[in-house]
Image 1 (cartoon, rainbow over the protein chains, first blue to last red):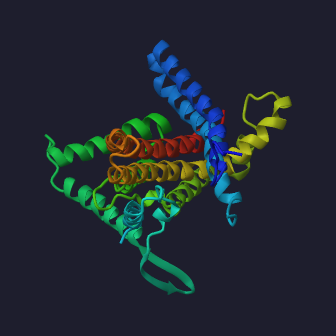
Image 2 (image 1 turned 180 degrees about the vertical axis):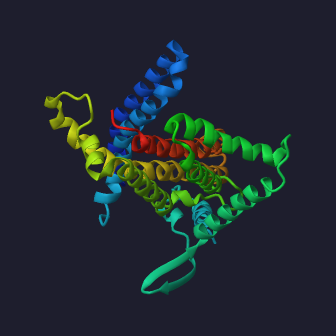
Image 3 (image 1 turned 135 degrees about the vertical axis):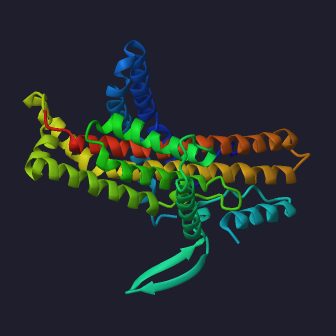
Length: 78
Length: 277
């Protein structure tokens, strides 16, 4: 049988790509909402910035956890 | 010899061998050979290239801050203008806007954090250094632990241990039914996820940035060696342009990540000094 395509190395990189979709959408929604709020009510920019950063940091956390998981659970494996 | 140089050597070695493929750079990039090793009280210390780069970065930013603030004039000159720009960004846009009226005691810490991170980050694109100490996990980790201790200590001082834990575990205005969901998430977030993400965010950005630069630079060298095969004459300039573009992208990342780290620190401090609702 002819091999047309093969993957070698860590399949975890594909998993991380999938795992980053959710946080990507989440961070996008947070900043879109912040921009919209600022456009509608520019004087609220300072008030909502704190919440925007908190929300973005929390959704980003998922992507960052995904990033370190292969290093933690893949340690010691070839 | 630096790690990047040995990766370059392995790429060049492949070129003389027609059957060999591209040797992609690995995590060995971040483990340069030791320059000096010693041990104090049973703890092993290793001085590598990256340690020296961090000393140089810290000395450079220190020298800049001291020299620029030595002779202050009402109409600022170049260096003083840069310094005032950075300082007023931290004081007005980060500390005052985010923390609120009680921002004053935190300005020195936030300023030091911002300038230290920006100087160390900038080493990722300074020629001949080309690697940021922040792409070793230890540096961001220590900074994140400092921030973690600070905001917890400030919160405990302001609200008392019981009051602080109660405010975190039972956020005001949440219907009691939802507490079964909210309490574990909030506790996990404040005490574990916050310091973890603070450290990993900075580390991951600089780590990935360095890897991208190395991949495209080595790719350019490899493709130039294979010119005339498989449309390499198309892809080699493309790879070079990507390396150039990524360098400019790194400039953005350097400033943005220093800013984000400082803003998030201020945000956590804001939660610590704010009175309960």
